[in-house]
Length: 332
Image (cartoon, rainbow, N blue to C red; front, side, top):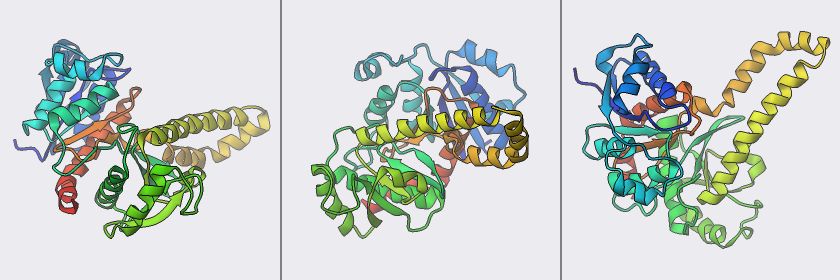
């Protein structure tokens, strides 16, 4: 059978490998009968996990890998030496067009290096950024970059904005997405040297809907659809976002269980609150694509559970269906 999308998954990457990776793959093929998932990793361990689930066997293929790249390993050295690792094999499948995308919860450094060295950049792309969707009051925003390029140039940020706009319009479905650059104030003259040099480039770019600067406090309100910054700032924003969300949820739960009266109130508001909190669960939105490569590479959290893995796989399907790489090539 010919499948519309073929997704390779690093079954050995992350804190809960291979259990959650295998379950996420099974859930994904149950949700879509037109996709095929390649689970890359230790064959015996993967097959042992697959025995736990009823699933369409032809939609999941086990691809053996004899090595695993650990988080603490130097990324460049690991990619060069561990040719039989799940990350290298999975990325080579994308390079050779045996798979349309590669998903991994493994070593961030190895994924970033492998994406550029093995899969390769689209001609004209200077630096591929990691771009996760983050929940906001109005839906989601794309944070680009959140971890790939700590030292970026103005021309890099301009490309981030253009690629992010393409992604938000065609994957998320937001027409003419609003683009903003992270700054310490709304005024054009504020910011560090990078922001000051990038601002006029974004302002002059006719491919994007640039709305100016955005302060961090405005991000959760959804003031912009594409949030542009270098990876140091982006990673700080992302980690604070994740930590604060988890803390608020814990505090709300404790408050609701603090007395008999609050417990009664909790029962009344539970359905609405559960739905609201779900919208701020980052796992619902899948992983962070490494934009600007010749094939799709998606990085999920190291602590990814089956829900995030499933959604990352389905995110890859949408990416392919909307021909995002072809659209990025057009704007270059």
